[in-house]
Image (cartoon, rainbow, N blue to C red):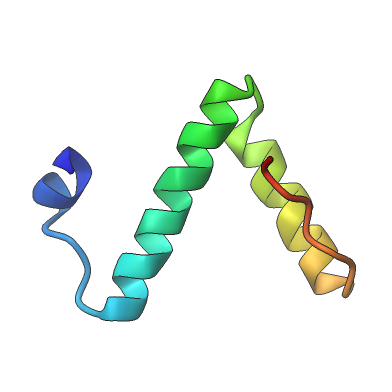
Length: 57
């Protein structure tokens, strides 16, 4: 993937997983014409309050 080549990847397996998930969420939001920022803000707010995180389906 071009992003990983340009950024030199991550220094850990956990970091690689985090980047892969964020890139996947970004692509899904783009396909759904949703704001990635708004989705992440909602997901973090719900997670912090113990509510279920909204799914990207």
